[in-house]
Image 1: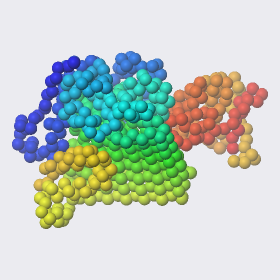
Image 2: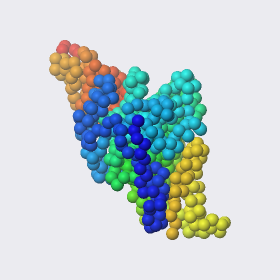
Image 3: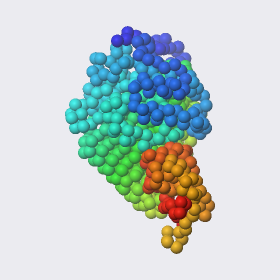
Length: 486
Length: 110
C-alpha cells in the first residue's frame, strides 16, 4: 500500500488578496478538487509519447486477446494518418508527444473500499464518492489515472443479471458480449480523437442491463486524473436490453497544473426496443484539461435515450453527444449546460438523427459565458428520408454576463421528409441592469440577483438531475459566479 | 426500377477477380460500382458511403466477413445486403446483381 501523502496545492491561507478578489471562475477549485497526490507506489507509468510500441505495450500489459491488439494497432494507424481537426476549438497546442498515455496507480481493482490504496482512498473520500454510494447509488466505479481502482454494484441487481464493471474486467470476463457491440456505434476511424481513444483506451465502464430489469437508483462512475501531462482515455459501453431502464452518472475532476492534460473518452450506448437510458455528465475538469469526447447512442423501437450534459470545467471541451433514432417511435433528448469563464472554451451541443418514422426528439442547450469565456452551441438535427411523422424541437439559449464574453451558435438542420414537425429557437441575452435593479428592489444584493438569474436560466435542466446532483451543480455554478459583478 | 431499364455490363474476365479482390468500374450512368469476390461469391455495391456520400469501395475489404469499411469514417458495410453494420452510416447502399457467364463477370445495372 502506498504511503498516504496528499499535497494540497495553493491552500486558501496562502493565496494573495488580489487572487481572492479576482476569484471568479471555479473559485475554490484548487482546494476542493485541484489537489494532487504523490505518485509514490505507482504500479506502472508509460513514458511520454505515442508510438506503435506504446500501444502494443498497453495491450501486452493488460494481456488482451489478439483481436483487441489488432484493433488498437489499426486505430493507431488511423490516428497517425488523420490531420488534427481545424474546426471548433484550437487543438493545435496539444503536444501529443508530451503525454503519458498509460498510468497504473494500483495493481488491483477492489470491490472492498478498505482494500483501495490509502492515498487513492483519501482522494475519493475528499471527493465524497463512498458517501454517495452509501446514500443513493446502485453501483459506483472510481477510475484513478488509467484504470478503475474500485467497483461495486448492488447485490440484488447483480442477482438480476445486471453487469456493472470496468471495461478491462468486462473484456476478460464477458469477452463475447463486449466484442458483439464493441466499436459498432463509434468505429475507430470515426474521427481523430476516437481513433486515439481506440488505440490507447483504458478503464471506463461496462454496463449490461437484461431485458425488463429496471435499475432504480443511478450507477455512477467517477474519473480522476492525478498525474501531470496525463492522458485519460476511458471507454464506456452501455447495453440496455428490451424494456430495461438505467441511469448512469459520471463526474470528473483533476489537479490544477500549469501544463495541459488530455481527456478523450468514447462512450457507446445501445438502447434496445422499449428500453430507457439516461446518461448524465457533470464535467468539472480543471482548466488545464483538454476534454475531447465522442459520445453516441442508438435507440431502437419505442426506446428512449437521454443525454444530460453539464460542462463546467476544462480548458477546451469539444463534445456533441448524439442519438440515432433507428426504430419507430424512438425518443431522444439532449439537455446541455455549458459554463465558460476566463480561459475556457466550451464547444458543446448535440446531434439527433431521425432514421425511422414517428420518432421524436428535443435538444435544449443553455450556455453561460463570463470573463471572456467562450461558449459555442454546435448541433445537428437530421430527419432522414423515410422518417415521416417525426417531431423535433431545438432550443438554444445563451446568456452573456459581460461585454467581453462570447457565444456562437452553429445549428445544422437537414430534413428529408415533408410530413414532419421541426422547431428551432435560439436566444442570446445579457443580464441587464433592469433585471438586476428589479431584483435589488426585492431586497437582494447585486451578486445574489445575478446568481438568481443564472439559476433560473438553467433551471429547466437542473430540475432533470437527481436532487444531489442538482444541488451540486447549482453550488458549482454559484462558485463560478462569485466575483462576477462589479 | 422496371425490367426494361436494366442492362448487363461486362466487368472483367472471371480470372481477373479472384477471391479477396475488388474491381471498381464505371456504370453507364457515370456512377462507380465496386465488385467484390467474397471467398468465391461475387457482390456489387455502389461506391458511395451513405453517411456522407464519399467513396466507399476502395476501403479495407474483409473477404471472410464479406464487409467493406468506409475509408473516411469507418462504417462497416455488409456486402451481401448493402446494410451498414456500424455507425455513423445508418442507411443501406445500393447493391447490384452479379453473375458469371462464359467466364465473364457481368453486372446488372439500371
